[in-house]
Image 1: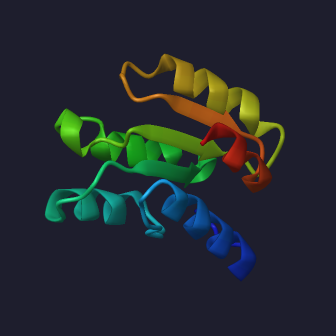
Image 2 (image 1 turned 90 degrees about the vertical axis):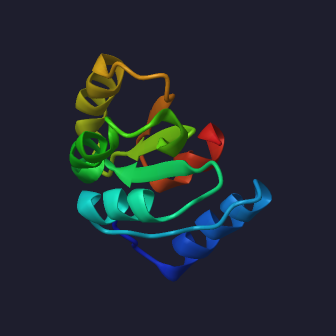
Length: 111
């Protein structure tokens, strides 16, 4: 996702630590897929912008269940995109809970 400020990164890292995790930032779906294929990891949450959500899901959807995120949070920077993001999330056939939020300030409410 697009990082707007150091404060946001620090806040997201703090939330991850509260749950025993860490923050990893990647820019594109292919980087995420590569990370998922090459690392053994603890359960994780995928926080992603609406712009990259579909390509990221396409890259990881066929992976084994244990490699999928425990939760996916899609952040919509523009209010008009939230409806499309909600429709897309509802159309997915997955056991992974997918939440949509209208901005980075709403993320902590989901987790």
